[in-house]
Image 1 (cartoon, rainbow, N blue to C red):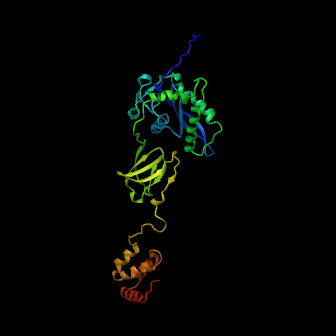
Image 2: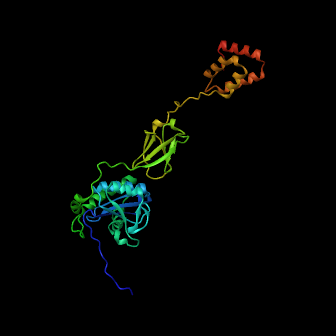
Image 3: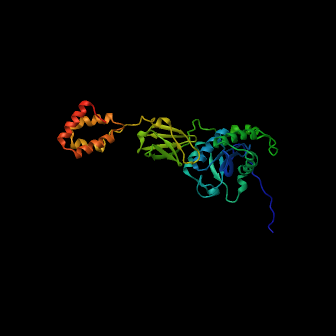
Length: 339
């Protein structure tokens, strides 16, 4: 038998460390049970908790969440402890972990650095791991949501209520301890740039650009041209060079839906008119250029573009002698016969 050893504990000073991690959960959205990724951030000293839900969690969602979470807590600790996730880790594990340059630059903007715990040492990130069970058994139990925005709005309100409640093991509420930790946090930058993901697209023949299988309309004049698409937390912005030509509300999930703005589609009957001549008209003018005026009048008087009347006239040109036909056409034009 292995000899039993006592477990240890981790004590943190104010603003020393915060912990971030994700966990899969099931949500009831719009009456359907949907898989979700719960992203959470906890300040290790005061245990202030903040979490949000996402249909998927990529590096883009990671930056979106951390931006919102740091704004919620009003600052950053010196270290952000994470699991050995590929979203942040470029190579190495534990103390030898090297972060992805993109995420290292993001952390530098908020004056903190990422650190990963050693493999197998789950207790090192217990501050953020423990609340996941609390969220599942208390917040999610018996709750349903209209959409993702409704779920995250209720999660934020629940965090406000839970952080203000008394904790027996802390002998205070997280908000009371946060009042001690708040002055020591790294202050937020004076200007926080909006997080966005950049796409380059060519507008398809229907006048749409595709982002995560969802299609967003753009002005019809851009069909076939290359545009720049910026995907932010709540918007899809389309740019032609430095000019923004379209803005849509972002669809969070890849649903394969179309989003069309009214100004991007002409109303019925007001589309561009076809200017190219019909094949029958070209053949008539090549065979008998003398009847050009009658052909133009026939197109104006006939229904639609006058295609049927032009076909009948072309058949007459092919079947009847030229001289009698010209006399008949002059007589018809004189008396206004176009039917």
